[in-house]
Image 1 (cartoon, rainbow, N blue to C red):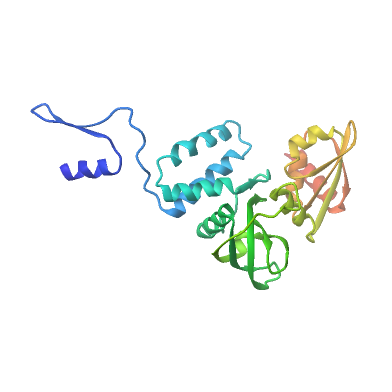
Image 2 (cartoon, one colour; image 1 turned 120 degrees about the vertical axis):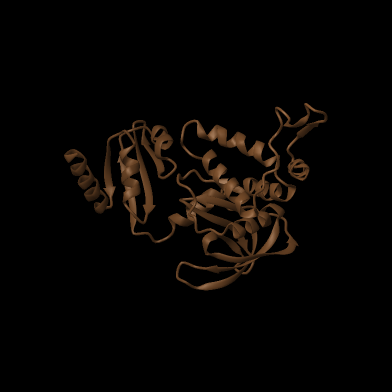
Length: 281
């Protein structure tokens, strides 16, 4: 029993002892939480989950998700605390809802995060959308969680230009040990840079809708997913590029305002089909 008590004390539990006939062991009241016994991947998962919750739209969750990491991180070993602090500091929230996909290797995410934070040149292998594989030598800038995916924004030293890389298509990241002076990003922030790159991709659908509501109101409700452009005081134009019409249809459904579909015709057909199905319900 004494060995068990010693082990609990080593873990940080304040166990008090009292000698004598009426003596014994007792856990001190009001003690702080002892150090957590978690591995590196669990620490990364904890940081990602809490950060995603803090950026979410569920009322009452965001504030708690900001307070909890401050309490949990302080009882973690310094090694884990450094990684989590780096992840939180080097990630730019983009505002599109939805958790990141689960196919990102936590080890890769951690390595990229630390390279961003330490301004350390990073080498990795990358598989492009067409399946072409290449080795990249970069100056990592920031991580962006956008559209349920993680992206690395970095300056490509081989191609001498800024690039965004999907982290789930990135393998074997290795820091070179060489530090660099951060360059000026050609965008307001990393999230805007990634968005602009995605908008330039060839996608099946480019949705354009005229909404009977002020731009500020529409931007507040669906601005996380659509580009909102003011037409006049009571109307605005919204645009979105997407692989599927389901998501823009749902977003327009919760908008709470009348709208007119300008493009594509397939989007209008889908909305009519959904409306008929809802009427039957």
